[in-house]
Image (cartoon, rainbow, N blue to C red; front, side):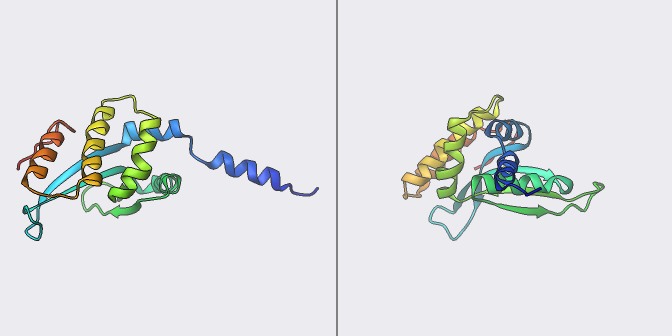
Length: 160
């Protein structure tokens, strides 16, 4: 019996991730965050970097690679653990303003999340849009972004 190319093509389609599955997975395992760190090489002395992250243990690294392929951007990197855990963690991370603006944000606008992470996403989107459209990085910019992110991931403490 001959193997059909159509069957192989159908199998490939089934392997692709469903957008609603990605939404649910992000609701459970993802994070939209914006960091502000001291950086003396910048005009204001502060660096702002938004990132979209999904973390998984080493056994589930493959799903992060599939998500990376789905979005066609970002990196998967190891976060080595030297504590009592038995496996290292892996992170799918997108930090590029362009990739966040062009790939990640449009996806989550089309497929909104169902948990409080949706609120974090809306604030995250504001920061990315400011950074994408406004090249002026002065103290006003840092204060404006800081005010927005103070409302995100409210369990985190921030100082600036």
